[in-house]
Image 1: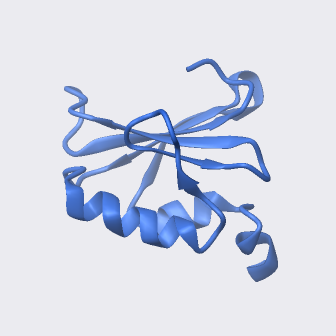
Image 2: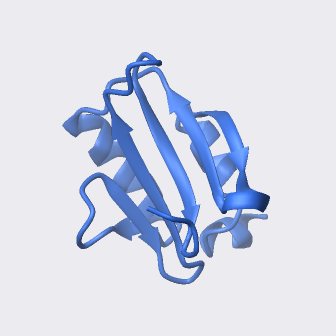
Length: 100
């Protein structure tokens, strides 16, 4: 599994280790999973997430703020701050085919 993690697979395990909990799984129907995290998505947390994701070939998205992409998989991680229904923030894991 370590090799699969290095090429971007099993990102859900990495996200769990970062403190995310699966909130909604629409992967099969919409190409999207939503995770929640009780921490504020401040600059320090974003830098920590970036450092961890870099190890698994995820890079900062060039155009979307608070987003990371994996070119090998054609997938996107996008952080949504200030969601009123939760404490902390949300993270959306999307395929290249999921709507923004």
